[in-house]
Length: 118
Image 1 (cartoon, rainbow, N blue to C red):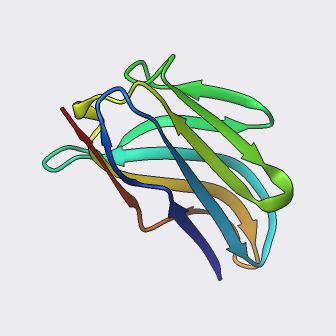
Image 2 (image 1 turned 90 degrees about the horizontal axis):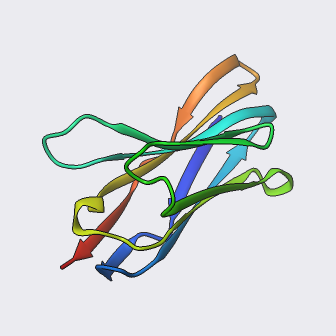
Image 3 (image 1 turned 90 degrees about the vertical axis):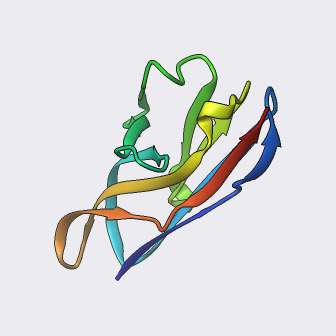
């Protein structure tokens, strides 16, 4: 069984910063891509950033403000969020495309709330 656990969410004022972490655990043979998504009430889940083989991609809405990074030895992905805006308020989820005993699958964390006050 593979599990992803996010941490680091919370309440921050506009202009502030937060760093999210997501650790993968369980029987993993290989993790390919890892990514961060968010979902605000009444909206669809939005891909913010992904990282694979050292290459990163970002949504236009966070480019220049958010930075994704990864520690392969720890099976952990990070999202450094700077210059936060009230519209960044959402539940943030990480995911991983990984190979486990059951083959290649996409795994999701349960999410962590980020609230940005104006």
